[in-house]
Image (tube, rainbow, N blue to C red; front, top):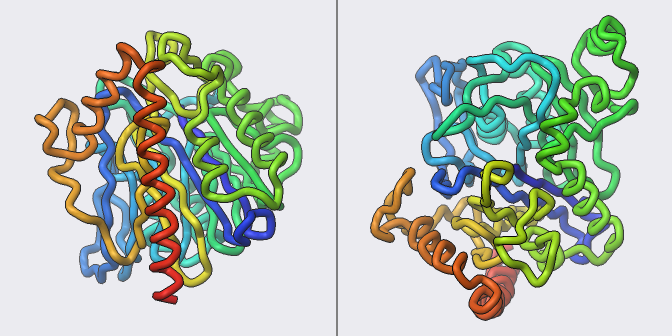
Length: 379
């Protein structure tokens, strides 16, 4: 389960487009925060998670957060301020055993695009050429289709897909997505032949009603989460800033929170049982300034007890230790070092988590202010 949001610059407190995503994965599926510098290429193909895809001559610098075993990324921002987050969506259409994963499509578009519209065209073009598919679970079997929020400093798009079919909606002010198709009868762009295909299926004119798998969509509580995040943004038009978005990404459906009362309605997801197998493995908030993006990434799980740390995309990352994998590494990687704390807190979260969060969030505010000062001196 995941949640992604965007608020365009005309509707935020600082007049800057804000993008954010929580990436929810299986508890031991560590996530790698990684900077990949710009590069020139002579090779003809690039190996994604399952397929080889034609390489381009030049790729741009990208900051991504990805499951350790995948080539593609759950979310990321490139040097030109293009930001993308993807969501699993559950549909009635057949899932392909092999194809480009949603994460592959996201990374390929980030590496090749200067604008959100260009990224949209890359994703839809690759989708129509190669198709989407492949197992997206490291420990088991998990197949789904994908939706995306694609943003840059000036505009944003919601892209929702079913197999090789897709629709896209241009964002007017604020928009959120979760694990459910959300585009109904109105869209701005679509794949060729979509409306005829929907007529053949005799499923109406609403994209989401035509294609949604109602059972999986209901269990995931994606519609509930999307409605909550959308309402939070709409109720704060003109007042949306980093701190409001951070509160949304850290929120739970019941406060004060206890993991034993967790729900698939939580934005900050804590794993618990058969129907809630995921936890928030990483989180990212990006301020998409016109001159250069400023990204705040946890690089760790559970944003409610993590700090968003500032990163200037072109500056790269500090030493985060070895890349984490599927098992505890003695705390050598920052991801597993934090995960040890997170799992100890399960035993008495209500007592200790608020105190830890208070200290981290105070430090986070200091780093936020220093990052803005450093940006002001640089641009």
